[in-house]
Length: 387
Image 1 (cartoon, rainbow, N blue to C red):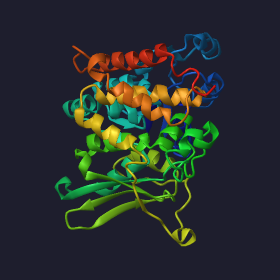
Image 2 (cartoon, rainbow, N blue to C red; image 1 turned 180 degrees about the vertical axis):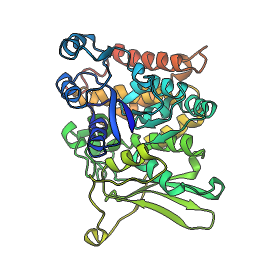
Image 3 (cartoon, rainbow, N blue to C red; image 1 turned 30 degrees about the horizontal axis):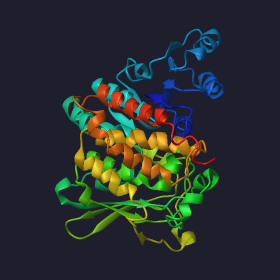
Image 4 (cartoon, helix red, strand yellow; image 1 turned 45 degrees about the vertical axis):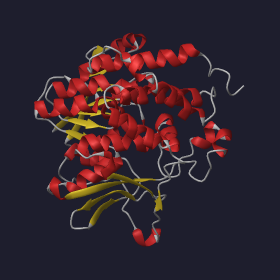
């Protein structure tokens, strides 16, 4: 039996983790966190009967404790990464920088981390990978691209790897020019052609910041430099990643677009386990797969992400924090789509000022994240851009 502690159970990835649990008698949910979806949280409690529930919003604690007095309730989501038991599997399916501290806590506890929260590695990759090595534990990716790479290189010598190829659908706005992006609506940007995801990550896909984050993730997870990571546009989202080897061969992982496949693999890593949920890939019905070169000028945020990674320190932190705020401003109709990029670049220019005198620690990364958000929000100049 494997007991799962799930951070972000009411989100898109969290819901799919629960679906995987439902069809596997060897899995159970022992603890979970949620933010504001109390109705779904109560349904999860009723169905899975966990030992612990975490929510930072204390207004829900009484609601839960009155109905389920046997459950331990905490406002510290990190607590569920430290729940007792040698058979605990921690899955971080949170969105944004909120996943950073739980990722650190999990690894520091000496547990493998199943990671769908890409921001953890973007912001604190240096710290987290060093900690995982120190504690002799693993960071197992749930991202479809990085999970695909992990499958391809499983059992192979890393010295044989020549490079990694991340595929990208192109997002909802792939065919638009930079000039046309000024008039993009929120609804248009949320129409992802291949995946059903949360709003924030769908916008990141449209700007391609998501792919910039994935380059940073790949560098940390597989110990490569950015020049060894290539991006290809692949609209069908069937080939999830490729690895090129020193014998000039390329190996790929193919599957339908279904996050339950990487979730299932991560839970059973490095073994393959029966998947009763996903459809079989039928290449004869697809017919043709397309690949297009990646336009760095059109999707310039990828180079911005690589620059932040190369500068290290607090630059990736400022990159992520400014992106979180900018995407939220766009989703709330306060800026146009093209302003996301300009806000990020403006904030990156102030990285040294924001982090002056600070040692690179988890707490200081959270401090700088909050500084960036406060700086943008207090500036107020984006409040009426779309009026």
